[in-house]
Length: 110
Length: 110
Image 1 (tube, chains in turn brown, orange):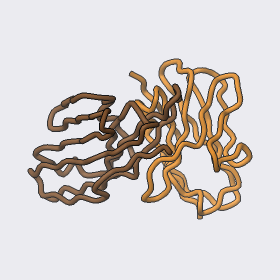
Image 2 (cartoon, rainbow over the protein chains, first blue to last red; image 1 turned 135 degrees about the vertical axis):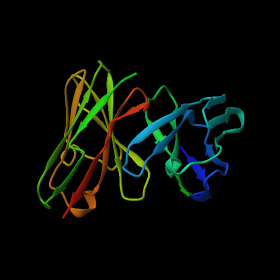
Image 3 (cartoon, rainbow over the protein chains, first blue to last red; image 1 turned 90 degrees about the vertical axis):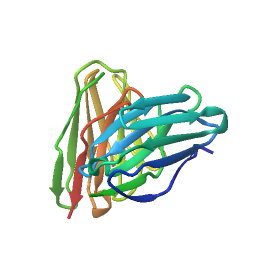
Image 4 (tube, each protein chain N blue to C red; image 1 turned 30 degrees about the vertical axis):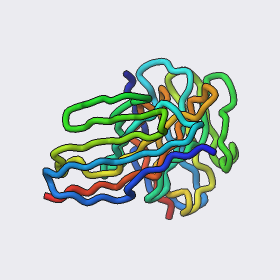
């Protein structure tokens, strides 16, 4: 079936700490993306990363498509990083439907 | 890139009434997607809206409850009909394989 699984479900950090979020996805899911949803509900696309590694400031992501997982790294975390991080992938067969994981809720304390 | 304007940003509605959510994109797009996010949950696709044809609904969502219009390539509406408290959610529109999302509509039904 179509599955996108994220871990951990919750994460609490002190400001300045680093973290790694994981996303496992099934064979029928491709073209991984990472999103951040802020406390007001706004959903921001962080990375479109079907494979390989990308970096944007303190954030980076790596997808190993052959092993069906993706990692999101957050370094030197800040309170503004708090929110929910979702990974999502497109279902197969040329579909443009995104399937989302359940998310990782990140809380960064000052 | 695409900029999506979604209205209203939030609303509190009486049960039994209907609310229409608007989504305006600053460029022409073939497909627009409507998602629902129930409290504390992930995003679930409601339907895909193509200009000039009926929307395609996902399992568990029906046209009578969530009628969608797509009058042109830059605009779509989603109506939540005959609302109950269970419809309290964030509703989001999206384009371009989920790369871009509107700001979301936070709906509370009382």
